[in-house]
Length: 75
Image (cartoon, rainbow, N blue to C red; front, side):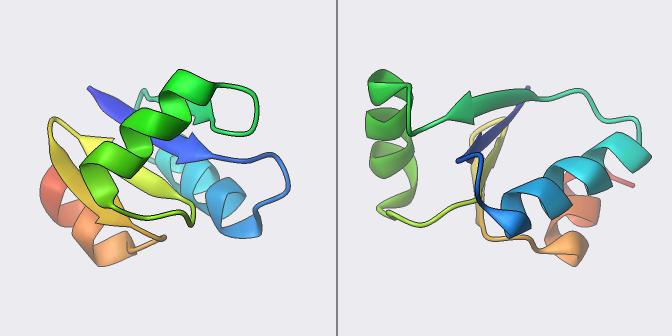
């Protein structure tokens, strides 16, 4: 399962989601502005306050890192 922790005004979050869309990767978006539990979970797994944070089956990527996404998703 792929989860993208983001906020609506984050351009890097949008780039991440557009990239995943272009590769036909299904993912869940968690808006940490409105989802307090999601925000807490993001902090727990990443120790970060910045977005995007991408969780791919427990492997965490901080920021839009195309090469790391490709590696973990085997794209």
